[in-house]
Length: 173
Image (cartoon, rainbow, N blue to C red; front, top):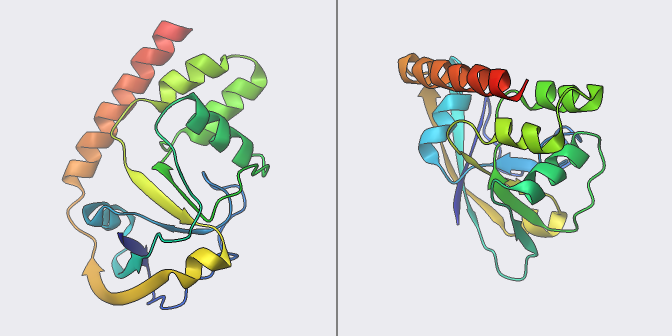
């Protein structure tokens, strides 16, 4: 599997303990199979690191944008990773995940309504390498320096997402 990670440096030897413990899929080294998506993470000048993941002999869990995915992310945001896997693959939660989870905690939204909110917008895939065994199967194949591209398409996508989010919030409340 070909994967990409955007950073400000080349990362030939990924570190699974460096990332946040309360990320979507828990602590790990995050990548994406979508090369174009890497440009969304680019700063003014960034490095796109390219890797090959040999999936052989790895425990891989694949999520879809559904209730299991939502519940797993919800637990991880509370640093309660309950999944034993070398690699976790699935959708990235949209940018409102913290707000949505906060609204659930306040009792304003039910988990099913929160899931509806998280289903809005495009679906981008992330891959979390979570164990040393998986890191050993991840081979760095090169890096490319990139410059942040025109953000017009991202802005249009974000505006569309925010309008859909606001409309669904009005419907729910």
